[in-house]
Length: 113
Image (cartoon, rainbow, N blue to C red; front, side):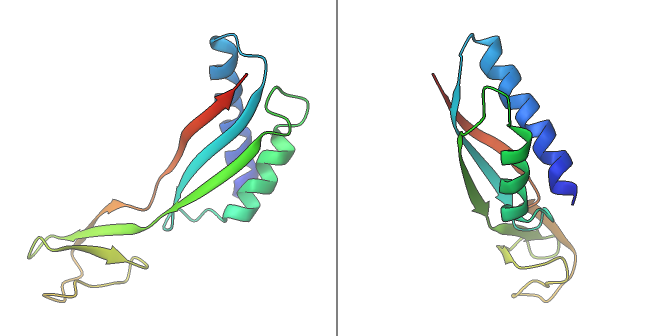
């Protein structure tokens, strides 16, 4: 479960930023997870709950937003949504695609007290 190691790093980052600005509690963490990131959102949520125990982020609400995958065809420059890396361009049927969005994991927002 690589989500646990991702969760540990994410909580470290969130706690570090909150403490850097002298906040005493993290109340909400909003993440953006791309559909091609190979991250299972519920496993990530469980990992975040475990990783945040006994930190200022304990009991923080976790919101996970799923980002669709967007690619651009290198042949015809058409931009479109993809479901996986094996998709082809719906206009010219090329497999030469550049993924623009959908592989990322971002801490989008944290709420603190």
